[in-house]
Length: 201
Figure (cartoon, helix red, strand yellow):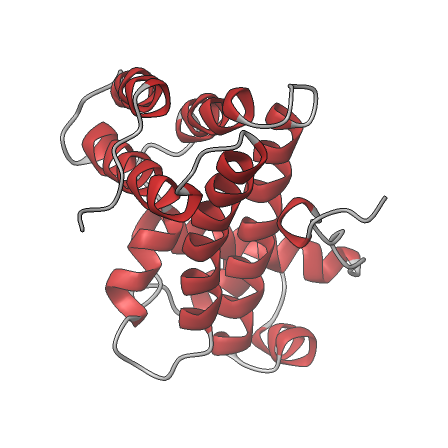
């Protein structure tokens, strides 16, 4: 049976040990201090390598930013799919996205790395923007897939509602200091799924 594209996550491409150290260091620094604030010198020092090695492996700082966002995307998607795969297709899987988010965000106290990156890169032609936009679209597509599988009459509209709940819970958890945001969002999602509200005519 063909696996829907939204459920298929590519494996991470193998890298040299030096490239791994660089990407690990860059990821920590970008997330903690911001993409624009972190220079290649700081990344090289944290990774125990040289600027030349960074440019040899990633081409430029922009290339490193793209690699950081791409790897973050793959790891986030893998976590979500690990949560939903054992569950019955449909409603239970949609709700499990909120459980996955709760676990993911417990390790990332500065909020969503994609939202943070978009705050710095949005409105530019930086190649990282496309990864961020695709990541948010993937969440909505995943909800649409689960709602379609569950047989809801307007799965795309319902997916949009669930996506707003999901993204809002991430912001509320960090900027709003609401530690139970994912749990509250899941409870609200249950109400939506039990009594779905159709798109206004």
